[in-house]
Amino acid sequence: MRRTSEPTLIASVQRALRLLEVVGEHPGGITAKCLARNTGLALSTTYHLLRTLVHEGYLIKLDDGAFIVGEQVTGLHDSAQAQQLRAKIRGVMVELREDLNAAIYLARYQDGEVQVDEIVDSPRTPRVDAWVDFRHAAHATAVGKCLLAGLSKDQRADHFRRHPPADLTPRTITGVRELVERPSSELVADTEEYSLGTACLAARVPCATSPVTLAISFPAHKLATTGDYVRPLSAAADEISRALALAGDRVCWN
Image 1 (cartoon, rainbow, N blue to C red):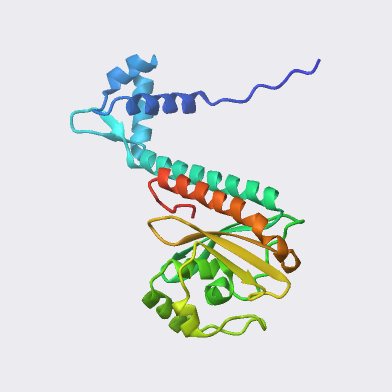
Image 2: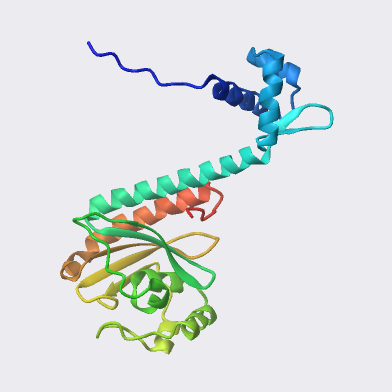
């Protein structure tokens, strides 16, 4: 019978991680001698590991000799939260792709530009061919129109001064006044305005930091079934909104 090989573990790494855990359990700091007692390590080993952890920024040695958690640990914590948030959001998008059999997009409006942060597609649900950068095609995409709907009229006017709307297909709306005056909506469609043969539907993701939208793209011949997409798309947008709120309303999937 073939035995499963045991993983190779580095004892010094294990000891250093245990020291970090114990320091984290003492908000007011803890001395090297107390750390040695708490971890069962020799005092000399404890000192060697502490010097390395301080040098690398994972611990800070206070004037009274106690050790506290350093900025490197804080950075790892922030990164872990951001990665967990991104994984949660992507999981919602994957479920929506499987449910609707469509490519899924997550985008935001930041620093005056449309920014697509995540796309979840597959060979059977390919993403739309981005033949024109979405930053310059907000007027013609459900993603862009939904994001712009979350801005004021003055902000929309400013956007179109910087990105004059161009004809991309015979269905593209290019009238600046119409685009600026367009009523705000939680759900926005693009019917072959960006790419012939492709339709898109976008839902606003409530978020206090900046406009965010969740969108799907699908073949235009499926437009008759658009009503079937509305409830799942809106529900997924609400789920992502809750995830952002629990993360402190930070859009941090970069």
